[in-house]
Picture 1 (tube, rainbow, N blue to C red):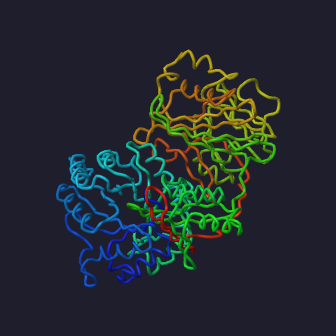
Picture 2: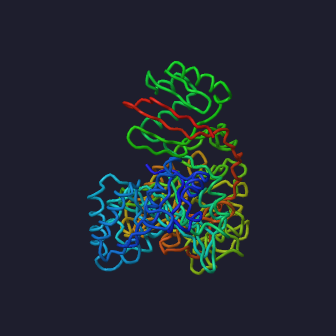
Picture 3: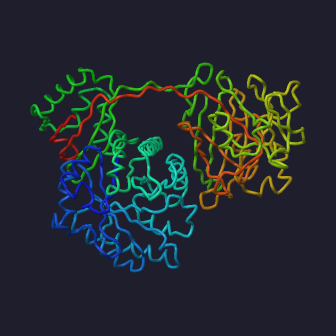
Length: 617
């Protein structure tokens, strides 16, 4: 498993003045777990001979290995002679003893014959290196490049390393979220290791805050690793990009199988006996000050070590690598953060399987294969939370995208609203803070009182405060609507489309759902009947459908900017007439400063630790 932070190198001579030891030291200081160096441009080798070294790649590998950093190669492939490209790569990998390969492929493979050429190249490579970790580095949005042979490459790959470059923009969060969501639905799926921008153009360059946002977003997605492109450029006026990379520790979301994962798990029991049980009876534990021999001595040392303030720490794995009977890994220990729970007056426990976005607002994204491939975005809102405020688009805000609506009115979450006759005239009843700007119609309506009490459908309440309408009633009294159930019209049971819908449960939770089809067929989502069934399964009592198709949008405020969580089927947000928004309080969390870090090595025999080199930072 590739974990942690990495950097691509195009020309070794352009990095740290070509000083291989300096490259390794800089990588170590920045906490990198891998470096990806160019080995070939098509059928032409790269970085294999300079005035500094006869074999700089192999020499660099020796320097990096001293810091437990993997050395990968990358090859730009063109497909004109895929067999020759594959043979060159396999030879360099074997000769230089590389830990993995990133295959950089782009427009040439979108030409006729690209699929066959991709398979020829990958077959050639895989035939020689069946166990080698291989990654595809190509476009960030597969929906924009449907004619690229994704399946032909990814079938033979271990990882997907998309080049998520936010050139001429400063929105890495939005771009990485979209890239991840598209690849999350693409088949065959491979773990995503995004590559961020650390280079400049004549009119653009990334900022340190861009890089920090990219790092934070990747960690929020629980990704195992990331990389940046490229080291050659990240110097001079771009030298500041190293600071956020170096200062952001990479914490793994899942522990690996084997003794390293078992060790971190045992440390978190704060039980010296549980930790020492991982060691062989005849073992040694070595640090800079002393050497301990035997399991009993090691157990006693761990007991004292935990007693010295570490029994309150949570241990996390930052990165690891290993071959044969050796494992190198880095960890950190930090005070346990406070558990985030729902606000007072709301749910007693956090929702299982949901991420809490704000006080009283919970979100879950789910990829589904039944009744066909589609993705659901489900938001639960605690209407008993006194700090929740629901907003319907005012008259002055009609005719805007959902993101613009969210930003203009300082909201935390928003969805599109009703269908419309024109962008200033929704089809159904619409009211904002007592101002009715669209008359009632046969369409079902959501009525919102001054204190955020929700009524979905039914008779008109006496005092209108907020109201937004939709196209169809989906659920009534916990059952699928009779019209939907009878499939009286083709649209109920035959037309599949992206959808936005709203419901309410008996325990006063507002449920917002946005559904989308797979990235390469976004419009092929759900029928109204299938959507109604989803709401019933969520325990909703009453639900209606808002506008769908290209209008379906879920926008969420993140770090002061609007992020679209779903993939609009138009390929971009659509301007719509009105919207429904949620204003909520941010989650309060304190930054936790790591208390201790270590960079350790295990030597194993029959799965047990026979020597442990402990290098506390």
